[in-house]
Image (cartoon, rainbow, N blue to C red; front, side, top):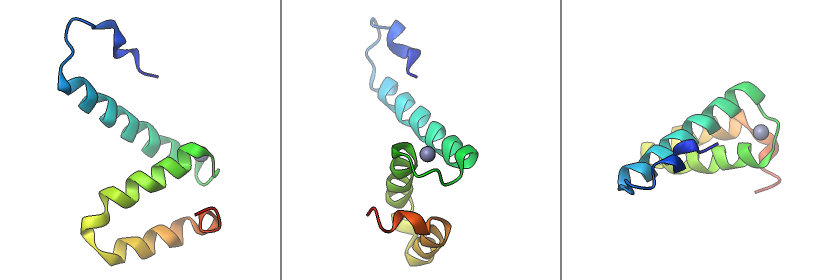
Length: 75
Ligand SMILES: [Zn+2]
């Protein structure tokens, strides 16, 4: 999943940024492909999404709930 460990000589902070970007892309892709399978990755996606969209206020939140009603019970 994270083949970037091949570069131990360059422990730059950019690596972490890349990992975060990768993770985000992975989660978005998973949510898009798997839809609402409800696995731990889906839940990570929802958490990340909630945090990232937090500053855009309430209308987005209604959208999330509308999109994933089945996670409401797990939360
Ligand atoms: Zn899933």
